[in-house]
Length: 205
Ligand code: GRF
Image (cartoon, rainbow, N blue to C red; front, side):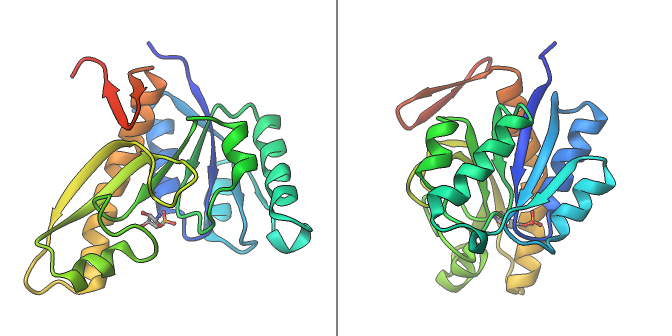
């Protein structure tokens, strides 16, 4: 059986992906423990969710630091204090800078609500709908210095319906996000992933 992977989550908003990760970890479906949740937004619902599960939850605000490097230094300090081995971005609305990237090389993952490399950046679901695609979806990927760019771990497709609005499409994509994010974490916990350039190889598949 895999050892339990200690993870830290960075979130800015409602934290439904965080919730999916916590639930998967608590139920034993994922061999991981969320050690801390850090938000750049003090009132973020994600912090409340973490506290409800007895997980350390703290806000770190960019405005309290002189530089982005100082701000990220504090985040790294907290992640290390909690023994974090994998950093999961879950609706974290900032670009991860060099300080965090260098502290956790190939150890930061993100979920994006589009089938990358299509529609990176903000509002992937709206971009997909406006473009007129018939299949939308979501992607879990490693984080590198470019936005929504690193090697892809897992994706799920969602059919676009004739009567879809941004809201209905978002909701169906979110269901898939809540499924594939914990799955991707479990693959890492099980030590099943290897990186070959841009390709993520999955053992036993
Ligand atoms: C999700 O759609 C995720 O893909 C994107 O931001 C949203 C966060 O939602 N990166 P939540 O905070 O997990 O509910």
